[in-house]
Amino acid sequence: DQQVKQNSPSLSVQEGRISILNCDYTNSMFDYFLWYKKYPAEGPTFLISISSIKDKNEDGRFTVFLNKSAKHLSLHIVPSQPGDSAVYFCAASAAGKSTFGDGTTLTVKP
Amino acid sequence: ETGVTQTPRHLVMGMTNKKSLKCEQHLGHNAMYWYKQSAKKPLELMFVYSLEERVENNSVPSRFSPECPNSSHLFLHLHTLQPEDSALYLCASSQAREPSNIQYFGAGTRLSVL
Image (cartoon, rainbow over all chains, first blue to last red; front, side, top):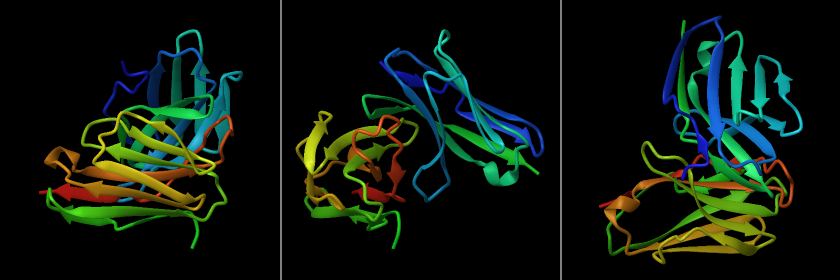
């Protein structure tokens, strides 16, 4: 049973518009949620995180929203830039251990 | 050097070969991880070392053997692999017991088993 799911394998948006990447989880014991970004031929890099006691965390163009009742989180990128094109992984951690989603490939078109 | 470094970046091996993957971190972390990423599958956690002690072994076949001689180095010894073991192998490090478990990844080793 996959505890962290990213149901959209890909997303395409126009430069300057908003990108919204979604993630669902099943384990209510998760206490941190993270987003990682991966370019081809590189390892994933940490992007932004949110504690389960918050519902929003913002860092520049990136905002993560957490809806605990729905067990859902989303990453908003605004405005989207071509350099944001990458695979985005959602991860959830409990007791210092992380579980990753499948990833969503974001393409930002100029 | 900074960050997490993995060598080699690419490896082709036959099913009867023995090879090793190496990971080195320069971040002062004390937890290290091996992941397998196959095409169209989520990252699969293979092994976790925390404070140089193996704390997790996720039902990984014995043809994969990890070694963590110190907190900065991690190896994955490979022997008699199968073609289905072809994948991207990622190493990561983090600060043990840090609640958010932010991990820092290497670029990975692309392994092809013929």
